[in-house]
Amino acid sequence: MLLTELQAFLNKAQKEVGDAEVLLCFEEGAMEEGFDEENTEGISDIRLVNDWPLPGTSIVNNEGKLPQKLVIFYDNHYKLKASDE
Image (cartoon, rainbow, N blue to C red; front, top):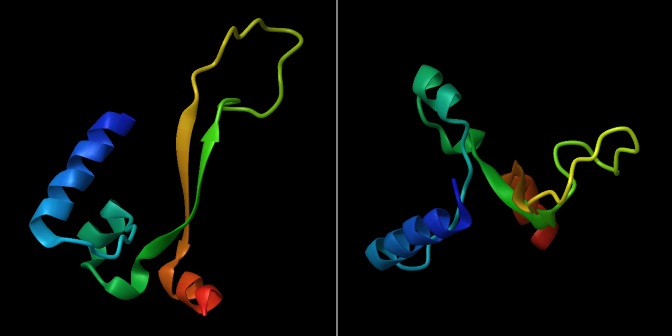
C-alpha cells in the first residue's frame, strides 16, 4: 500500500468516526480465532527507512538508489498505554 492510499483510507475513516484510537491486528489470526481487542497492537514508532530490505550498503552489488519505505512499528497497545502514563 502506498502512503497516498493509506492517507486516503485514514481520511475516510476520520470523516466517518472522527478522532479514533488506531490499533493494529493480524488479519489471519482474527479470521481464524475471531477478533479480540486483547490481541491487538498499537503503533510504537513510525520511521522512514531507505536501506531495505537489508541494512548497510553492499560492496558487491550495485543496488542503486533505494526508495524509502515508511515502516510502522507496533507493540501490544496495552503496553504502549502503560508506558504513556
